[in-house]
Image (tube, rainbow, N blue to C red; front, side, top):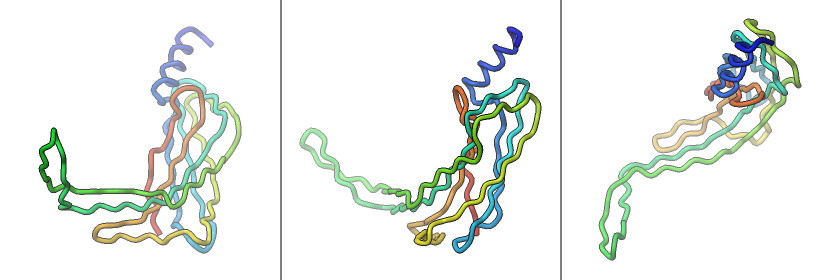
Length: 156
């Protein structure tokens, strides 16, 4: 590996630009396993990966507007109307899709993983103040900043 190749590899490790990662999901199912496909395109340097992983989370989020909040500042009370929110993970699955490998420079790679939600997984809902959704995230575990797909919302 030449000097400039090493510099490119180091830049990619720091920025997470060693590969572009995306994922595609068939319809989410609560009763049977469903497939998620992870795709990665490497840049101009080979990428040494210790594993390819997938995270699937269920998240309940609540946001209530116009809540009267009381503040105390140096003994003086004042009120302000705010939007108050909270969130909670109802599910957090991490799946190792494949183990260590080296991805060649300027190449495309694809892995498929089957996901089975637990029997007690909450349904997707969207209310006026509250919602429950599922999101997936794929990443390549490597030195430096892991290239990843970002969070993608899953649909039924």
